[in-house]
Image (cartoon, one colour):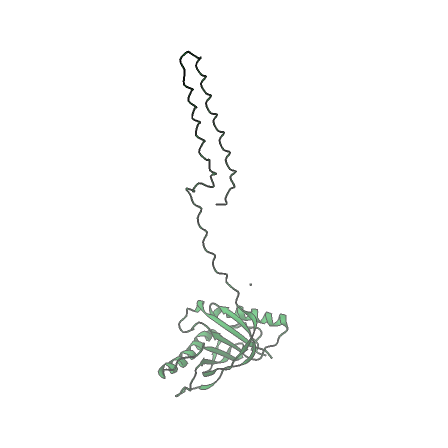
Length: 238
């Protein structure tokens, strides 16, 4: 079992309109029709009958304030932001072997990230020179660790043979088999927090890891700001 004393020194065990309901305003009481004027006293001359008084028009329909257009429309609530789903943490995963060009290296913890990116730069330069495009994300396979540093293999998936390989370079296959998948977001300097959480997860589940682990860089470590890195961590199980 690899013992980790931090990721840069402490990796400990590896390789979550409020609309007020206005009551309808009561209709105004209809004004009583004016009383008919009394007929004048009868006289000898015939008097035409009094004209029937025109009834007062009914009051205009009174509308509820809710019916009237609002002068101050309530603001439209903003569209809900998409829910951020949690990254996988301890998800069972099957690694499929990929053809890769690789280079072996070693580093101390103080210069870990620089050493890893230097190896990936060397592989990338070789591929660009031969006009070969990667077929997947760059990977780092950690093969051993101790208090001072670690050994690793930097790998880039390809679909053809790469020629003119440099020192410590070779062709091969990436690791395969059953593993657990974890996700790290942010700086490489904060990887120790992720690995501590991984260690606790393995302890809680009483799982035993193999003497290796794999990092897959889903963001290009050569072009991405370090605090924006997204790294899948795969832990092969015994």
